[in-house]
Length: 25
Image 1 (cartoon, rainbow, N blue to C red):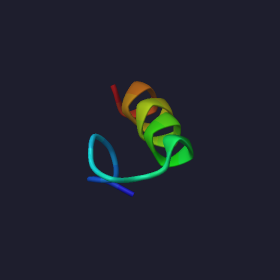
Image 2: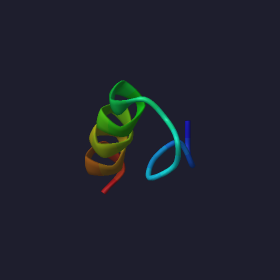
Image 3: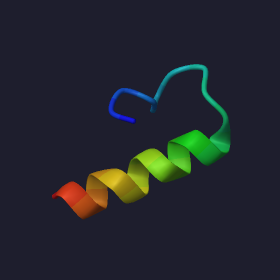
Image 4: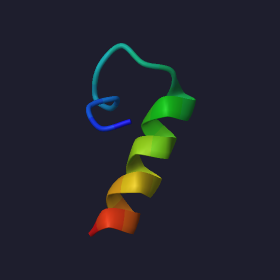
């Protein structure tokens, strides 16, 4: 679950990407 954001993914995936980014930051 690294590059699953900003592409043609579902909004859920984008949301998870944001959460993951915040968690890793």
